[in-house]
Image (cartoon, rainbow, N blue to C red):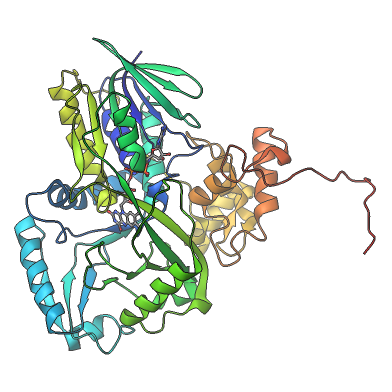
Length: 484
Ligand SMILES: Cc1cc2nc3c(=O)[nH]c(=O)nc-3n(C[C@H](O)[C@H](O)[C@H](O)COP(=O)(O)OP(=O)(O)OC[C@H]3O[C@@H](n4cnc5c(N)ncnc54)[C@H](O)[C@@H]3O)c2cc1C
């Protein structure tokens, strides 16, 4: 029997697992998908928000500001790229100016440091490619960008290094409870635990209803994005926002930690919790809106698009012990700024567990450090030579767009949470993230996974389950039909 089972290995569940792994507890992190960070945590704006958007006194306001403060230490310990680039919320007219002043005051009440309004000359000196129509901006120097899936993977890996179990490809179907434990029934196993954390993203309401808690409802709100080629990375140095709308923070243009430009999101409520498809109209909508801030944003530079689903439940996060059973902790409605808040949410949940009777003794050999995969593309010549001398596999480039080597892919395959699908490799080593979007490197990556893990190449999938890539293998010497 586990002390704690965490349902959902997104950024929230993974950060909770990492935080709990510093104590003498048996922990199980489980997810229905075949890799961590396969839900909303892979499809968002990747902004570490400063914290001025949320209404004072809300969980969002408190956890955003705390999460922003914690992010630097978490990313340093976990070897995750995080850049405090600062954000600019643009104003184009007097109404917008009113909004800027309001948000600046709100931010100060929330405890956001260093907020100030900057005017046209300073603004255009800081950002050369924003629209000439922008008259001022709310500047938040503490905002930043992080890689959301790398943070999730790193936190989950660190939890595993510190003794947590991870079970992937297991959908929770029902939960039974008695006086001292829960039985979590998945498609594969029945897992017993004394405490349950519901961190199931857009499904958190469905999971809670399995113990009869129907206290909140989640509406998925889709946001679509385009990623621009790194060649256009000069278009934005800061996170560039437009004034918020009733549906969210509006369309932004931002650099990513890897040097691309991200454009989006829009906001449309959907019925289907699996609907992460992009649409031609949606992408047109975000590109047209983004041009109001940065006129040079162009469809010609788009290398890929994606969508994510916000888990919307009223105006705030729903983080509480369930009224049905205080050993079941709900972590629901974690829409934006959930990524920013995740480290702070982890601390809050630990406190709830403690209050619900879980004894938490610090682990003497807890190791907060997780070393990431070497990033060949970011190394200088000397570092590259040294790495190749240690292992020649780092001298063979597999993904030419992103300069990812065989050594990096081999390491990804053999991490504490092994990457055995194309998407898992992509998220860990960036093979396939570049301009050609894996057109060249896919067969090579499949060969490496196959060789490392002894899986036949036609058994390798895009993202687990039935997402097969090859329907069969043509053997050398096989006859084939070459009629044209
Ligand atoms: C468009 C958009 C933009 C955003 N931008 C930002 C931003 O810039 N900054 C910011 O701070 N936040 C942002 N957010 C919010 C942030 O992305 C989320 O708050 C965060 O990713 C939520 O993480 P999570 O772990 O709760 O959910 P998820 O990442 O969705 O994880 C939940 C997991 O639960 C699993 N699961 C569900 N049901 C079951 C089941 N029955 N059995 C087993 N597993 C199950 C899922 O597979 C999933 O992996 C944005 C969100 C969206 C959609």
